[in-house]
Image (cartoon, rainbow, N blue to C red; front, top):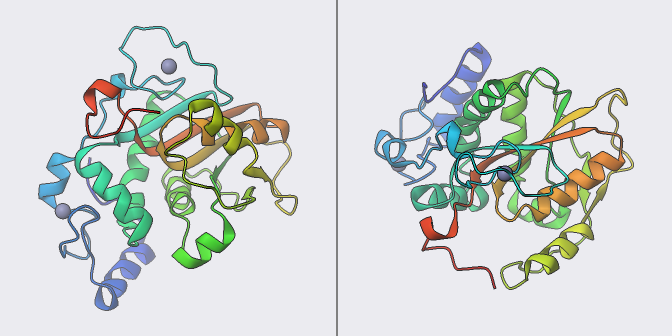
Length: 254
Ligand SMILES: [Zn+2]
Ligand SMILES: [Zn+2]
């Protein structure tokens, strides 16, 4: 796959002009790269990109191929681009904290390919994303999930619905919470935005977030979307947490 998909003249011009004021950088190593690249060649080679057979199309987890899916999620499908390890972790850190938005543009065509290969695109009506607490988004300057959703919408041709969900309060760090505590915290964190408008005939939504970890955030958002009338929720993320044994650098859940 090409690293840059640019079939739109205005997007090419925008990137070229932006590069003059904000020099283009690799989202992993932060070295300067040419204006029309999204990642440097060294980092591209080392990215832990998923093989399509590695990921369960239902829960999105990396349980062994052929093993039936045991999980009971509110979402119906999940696709990701790479494993949350090695330089993918660095890329996500930079994506969240250092405006490394190239990662969204780089990942969207992979998400398109995974959705297409699994026959999930033709029924998709709209794209939305996991919201960020407004004050936090203001401080950061952007919501990385929304940036990714914009590119997923562009790559797939499925329309984006902005601010369908809202983040109600600041979340305390989830690192020390048990799985059940995470579920509860996520449930009380999100709600439907009463001001959001979309075609009520829409039945399938693509829900975008940066990383799929336990699934508690995506489940909480999928619950709300189903209560709002959606019949199918397809999650799309850049990264998915690998199985524990493959991922010694991630601390085991408490
Ligand atoms: Zn690099
Ligand atoms: Zn599964």
